Amino acid sequence: MAYWLFKSEPDAWSWDQQVAKGEEGEEWTGVRNYVARNNMRAMVLGDRGFFYHSNVGKEVVGIVEVCGLSAPDSTSEDPRWDCVTIRAVQPVKTPVTLEAVKADPRLADMVLVKNSRMSVQPVTETEWQIICEMAGL
DNA sequence: GCCAACGTTGGC
DNA sequence: GCCAACGTTGGC
Image (cartoon, rainbow, N blue to C red; front, side, top):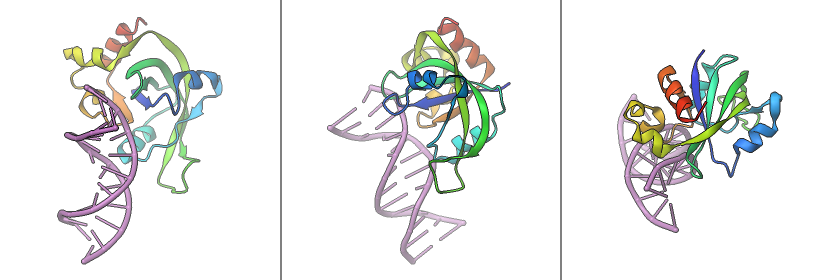
């Protein structure tokens, strides 16, 4: 199983909205970046991801699961763009802030730190475990 | 609200 | 195929 991180501005799409979608999940639409798209194309059913609030909060707030493989993005006319479907699995006990991630030398190589603009990014198993621990999970 | 970083677009 | 211009993201 692979691990990922999905970024969303809570003003546009928040964790609460994601949770409200329940088991059915929600298409992760709107990605218009090739690297982020390719990350989604590499996902398989059951892969886990962190749900991160950018701009407002700047923290990991929950765990999601890939429940639909990459398919054409219904919000784009352009066939180049597609997206996966994800569903909320569980909230974190303690949000893990960007500040906390930056403060931990073990997480210095995270894409979140190194490339702040990557909206869908891979997370290593080690990074996953460290952040889960910080999140109280 | 600003602005640095960086990805995309489009003219040549 | 290059690269300047432009637009967007997201931390601060």
